[in-house]
Each structure stands twice: as structure tokens, then as C-alpha cells.
Length: 109
Image 1 (tube, rainbow, N blue to C red):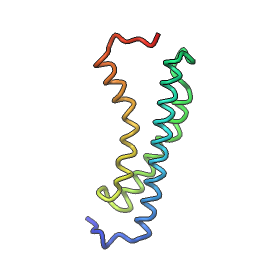
Image 2: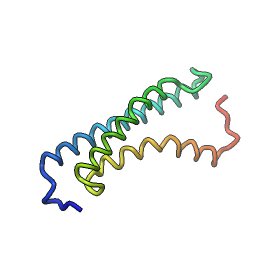
Image 3: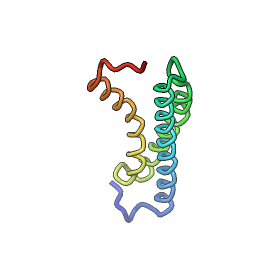
Image 4: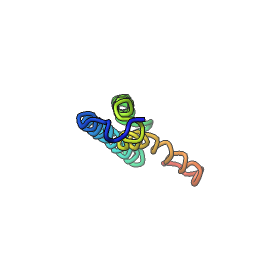
């Protein structure tokens, strides 16, 4: 395992930048999910909002690539932002499971 003194300052800077990119991807994804749910509740769409899927298509691979590069550069313990941000991508799925468990008979309309 690489100690803190062995990781160069340039690597730490690159990992921080990649972590910020991953965080921005996760925030954009989550905001598109919120907007899509807001529009679904308002009755704008009959089916799933297409914007949500488009944003997911572009942000998830970017976040995964940035996370993998960060983990390769400094190891799994030092890329904290890179670990946390991809977990946000699972949040809508967890919310949907929670809603289904807590209120299975709830309908949008």
C-alpha cells in the first residue's frame, strides 16, 4: 500500500480534479432525477422522462471512469470524493425501493 508521503502532489491534484468531475456528474444526475420526478408527478409525461435517461447515459460512464482513474492513481483509501459520488447514482434506486416498500399502493394519478 502507498503511504501519504509516497503519493506525489501532482497525483493528489489530479485525483482531486477527477473527484470534482465525478461529484459534478453525480449532482447533475441527481438534479435530472428530481426534475424528472417533479415532471412525472405534475403529469407532463405519460412515460419515463427522457432527460433522466440521457443524463444518466452521459454522466454514469464519466463518473465510473474518473473513479477508476482516481483509485489507480492513489489507492482506494485516498479517493474519498471518487468513492462517495458514484454512490449517489444508486440513490434514486434506493428511493424507489423505499417508496415501494413504504407505500406500495400509491399511484401518481
